[in-house]
Image (cartoon, rainbow, N blue to C red):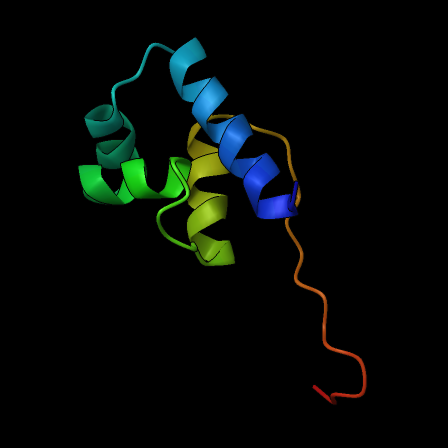
Length: 74
């Protein structure tokens, strides 16, 4: 299971724990309902900033950092 798949599962589990609909979650992070559904169900690859919005809204204490490719200068 990849990191993004794990995060998707955590986001989906927390959404159900908080008894939120996809629409309520999408409204809270400023996205469309289909965007929230696609993210949780793996139909779309989100950006790190999008994932962070969901994690903040759902009070999840996870840190997301992107690794720089080896041999590439910043």
